[in-house]
Amino acid sequence: MSDATVQPAAEPAAGLSQWQRVACTFTAPSKTFNDIKAGHKSWWLPFLIYVLLGYLFFGAVYTKIGIRQVAENQIHLNPKQEAQMADLPADRRATQMKIAVYVTEGVFLATPAFLLLGIALLSLGLWGTINFGFGGKATFGSIFTVWMYAALPSVIKTLLGIVVIYAGMAPESFNLKNFAPTNVAAFLSPTDTNAALYKLLTSFDAITIWTLVLLGIGTAIVAGVKRPSGYIAVFGWWILFVLIGVGWAAAFGA
Image (cartoon, rainbow, N blue to C red; front, top):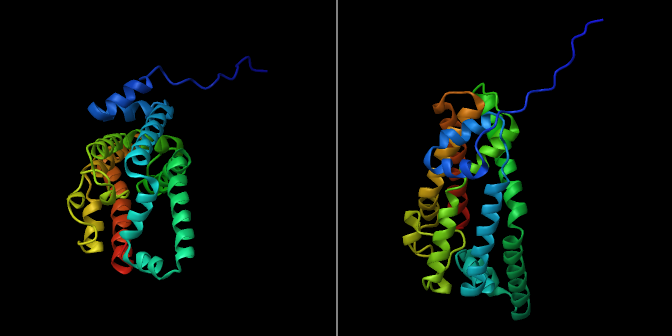
């Protein structure tokens, strides 16, 4: 019999701390993504940052805008839904408003679950695209972790939203779907602007583009493909989502 023994799989070499990865995402993103590729896939810190800021944003909305006002604003931004609500008897209209308020509040409170589910689904699509479409060798876990870090610029948008709310925004002008001045549409009236055009301008958001660039870099690194392949995979999905959103707005006005 051979005296050879089975050696355990080597542990990843010591890499960046999660705080360093968060910082490098803004200053030297390749360091963060190469660290993920090396096997360091912890993502709980950015997740906690998103959850904390999400609830701070919720607190600002709850105290300065009001959940009922948020629900009313969203209905007002959808002319067809607003017309349907106006045609209802008073008692049914009141019931529908209560439901809208509960749903709006529930979405805020369930932010952590929606965040995890959303990133998991997006990661699944990107993982399949980069591996089967571009010959990459990424694992689902590495793509998921890249997503968690690549989305960090969104904290800037959340903080801007909080600042805008506390700066004295009129509650009736608050738009939950576009709450910070990071795109041209934020400076236009959503009710006076063509719905499809407004949706298109909202999509060209500075924070969104920043996130997509980071995601393209990270995806290429962990998949072991050229950077243009990462950009094509990421921006290809984004263009598809934008076209669907604009088409929906053109067809249904929301």
